[in-house]
Structures are given as structure tokens and as C-alpha cells.
Image 1: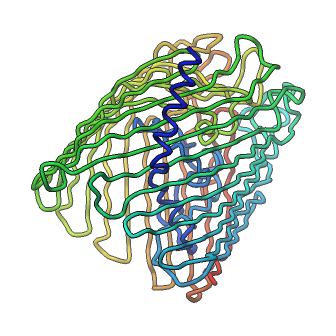
Image 2: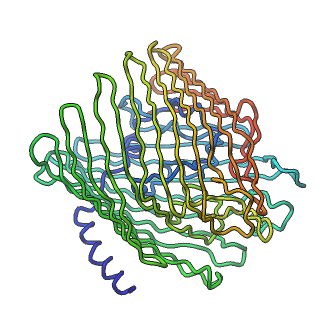
Image 3: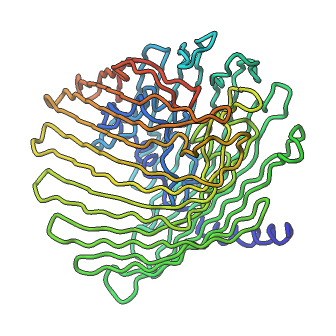
Length: 571
């Protein structure tokens, strides 16, 4: 069987490599074009001290580009820290050649960035970017333990060099990047021996990616990417254990062509992911790590009418790991305008959550070392709603959804047979439905306000990995009710003030077979920036102003009130 798998891989790689290289991540494209200054958006003033990124896995295909800083190379808990979201903000194009940014605050929080254009002609562009983000401060556990403090440490350094060539009818991008990330596992071990003796874990990640897509209509439109990642770590589950590493290859291809006139398209998307892990001899026989290979095909038809759009397709997923499986799920969407400013939409999708090592690192770096999380499968996920914009500058989106996922993962603090500082994955079948509404207003142009309210409903069954089952299964680490408010006020053409508020409750974890209710998140954040001139900007942000105490995961506390200030200089 393995021979057949590798034969399939060898046959597929040239196919993907032929068009080698899907559309580049738009966020990083904007970053590397240096269209940047410190200009925090609504999101920068908010969710700085909020939930870890435990959003439901996207039923669309997971992003395998692994330009890690796009969603912050830091783990989701660092949403509770000042983030360099400012350099990921859309601003008007500037003629400056580059920028330098530096912010610092309590807890030894540091956020820095340097970017420069080496070449910026009509057909060729060469850019370089370096990002730094770190913290080294004491935080308090929210459980009654001795000692009740620990130093939370991490430092991420990310560098990327990008080249773009613009042809007459297409664009080609190639870049190389390197991430060096070191951190300690600061989870609460309730007085037990720390497995790594508080030594810093290190992840090194090298990425090489190329992409090609047409910019003018062709008989067959195309876009494709090819990406190679090499990663390694310093420690296993103990100081003496072998460390973890491997290689990941990703390729994507999208081919489509017009038919029956207009904007109607027929096409097919293909995707290949191959993850090949190093052998770890210190693991037990029942913990051996399997390579992961997935081949996906997504045939589709896109149709458009006078006031409607429709996409009909299917996801066909072939997965080869410790078992070989085939999955099929819908990929259908429909939207229609019911008035000049209002529309209805409905989506029915599904797919496989790969949960590769790099996927999981992006969710939480504090996962038990040398651990691979099994892939999940969503046979269907339905969401829909109404977008209403009857008034100029005032929009409402009322939405809801329902989905089922097999082998969803829940990250909890390891507590059996004894507490350790790591997070471990529990797998279970999850049914998730939600309803909510989002209101956005900028009726008065200096003030922009967005409010979102969302209620989640969960049902969990068939959980694997529990030594002792609790009286009730919970959707651990997933919020029940959320309120998210963002506001930006442009006091003058030079001064902006931001305010954010985030609330989340009904959060649960599990330890020693007992459900643990986590404290509510009740976070208020505020910030301001002042453009001294076209080249120099100063800023100040305060996060968790209420100084709330809560855990991101049980045993992993957030920082208290933290303030960060600094400057951005464009040259």
C-alpha cells in the first residue's frame, strides 16, 4: 500500500508543480509591499486580552501556506498580549522605501518590525521584512497552588525575502522565510515536577513558496502554489527525549474557464499535502507517529444572474495516514440581492481538518511535544443569514449555522496520571449550532462602530483520550456566548482613538475527570495614535483595563492589565 501511495505522490507533484503556485496570502502581500504604518484598526484595540483562537475549524480547506506571522507565529493565547496587528492594516500606498516600528510595555512585552523595498519597478519587486515579538514577565496562576507565580517567556523572530515579477498577463511570486520561536511551557503543574525543568522549547521553521496566477482573462484561467516547509524542535517530552521535526509539502491548483457567457465558470481545484515526520525512537509503540498525505479535488460550477450568484461543487478528499480514507462533502453557496442594499445568503460546505503539526502549532504551541492530532472530518456545515443596509453607513448582518464534525479536538491541561505543564488533545464528535448578529455603523464619518453578539450551542459525544469520564461532556475551551464591540474615533486628521470590549462566558475545561468552569472574559481595551507627520507616528495601547484574571486554557493564565507604547518611522 505504501508503494501505491508514494507512486500517487510522485504522479501528482508534477501536476501541481506545472502551474506551481496559488494566489499569495493577501495579508503578507500587503505587508511586503510595505504599505504599512502604525494605524491600529478596530481589532487592534480589542481582543488583546480575549479568548484563545479556538474558533471552529474552517470547513473550507485549511491554509497550508504557513507564513506563520499572518496569524501571528505566537499561539492563540497571545491574543491576550499586545500584538503587531498594526503592521497588518490597510493604509494608502506611500512612497517611502521602508519602515521601522518599535513598541514596548510592561511584562517586558516588545513588538518590533523592519521592512524595506530593495526594488520597486513596474515589473519587478524585491522586499524584505523582519518581525520580532517577545514577552518575559511574571504572571499569577488562577488556581490555589504554591508557588502561585511563574515567568511566561516567548520570543519569535521572523524574516522573509520576497520577489515578484509581473508579466503581461500573469504574476509570479517566490519567497523564502525563516521563523525562530522559543518559549517555555508555563502551564500549571500543581506542584508536580516540570518535565522540561522550565527550559525553553525552540521551533525552527524554514519555508520556500512560489506562486503563479493569470491577471488577464485566458482560455483557461489558472492559479497555483507550491510550498515547502522544514521544521525542527529542540526538546521532546523530557530533556532526554528525542526532539521532533519533519518536512511538509503543499501544492494547490485552480483551473477554470468561462462558459455560456457572462461571469459563469466551470472549474476544478486540486490540493496536495504531504507531511513526513522524523522517526522518534523514544516514543512507545502505541504512540508511533504516522506521516500524513491528503489529496483533494473540488470540481465546481459558478453561475451568476442579474441579482444572484451560485456556486455548486463537491470536496473529494483522499487521506492516507495510519488508515486510508475517502471523504466527500458539499461545497455549495448561494446569495441574492433582495433590494439595492440588502441580500440573503446560504452556504453548505464541509471538508477535512488536517491538524498537521504546523496547523496545531498555529493554534497552540503548548501542545504536548512529539504529539500529532488526528485529522477531523466535517460531512456538512450549513450557515446563512441576511445582510441589511437600508441606511447609508449602517449595516446589519443576522446569521446562524449548524455543523457536525467527527474527531474534533479539544485542548486541555494534562492531568492524568499526574499534572504536567503541557496541553493534550481530546477527540470527540461535535455538533455546533450558532445564531448571532453584527451591526456596523459609520453614519457619522469620524466614528466607526461595530457590535457583534453570538450564541453558541454544543453537543459532544464519543470522546477519546479520557482516563475518567465526567458526568457531562462539554465542548471544552469553546465559548458559549460572545459580545464583541469595536469603535474608532478620528478626532482629527492626525489623532485616532480606539476602544474595544470583548466578553465571553460558558467556557469549560476538564482536569482529573472533573469539568472545570473557566472565568468569564470581560476585557476592555483602549488605544490612540498620533501622526506627528507623514513619516513619524506615536501610539499607546492599554489592554485588559479591568485587570481581569482568567485562563486561556485551564492552567494557562492571561496577562493582567498591560500597556504598550512606541513609534513607527517610515523612510
